[in-house]
Image (cartoon, rainbow, N blue to C red; front, side, top):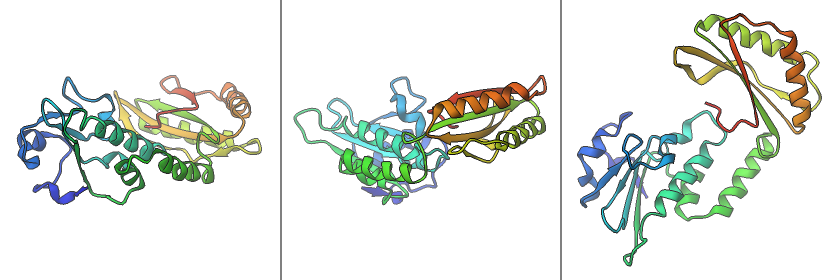
Length: 234
């Protein structure tokens, strides 16, 4: 396990430092990042750069591996664990024993420690307890309502109005979150706000949402979408 001191310069949002300095790992290397043609599909999740030694891939280096842990998504730890275990599996496929170097600023994170030991059951035991305690999937259903508009004020007002209406006559067992800007607040010229509901009955969730949305008019430039059992919260 390699801590943050692996990088001699302050880290940035891109991977140029890694591409120009693979000698940090003391071997000739090929850098694969989210912008490379041969990048791993999952690398977008953490914006981590993947450094592979050529030919036998006996050495794998993962830079800023824990960046995805800080995303406001209850699956952030799971995605980080998945990425680390999958990339680490690329080392040592030949006759030579493989080695994995992980650069992290939070080395004691459960996602990183469980991935370090390839402990799938241990990770799930802890993760499932957390989700069960705080009422998150897979123990409840989650409905994400996204409100977007080219005008930030209209999107925000629509989200707040929708949340107030949803709170009226809220069925028992349904948890209603506060309206809030989406983690990716603006995308493609649209300002995005979210309202989240959770509950054990997907039928109760769906019925309540439909009843409220059918009676609530929105401005023409406001777009409202509902994602039941949403997998992506950004």
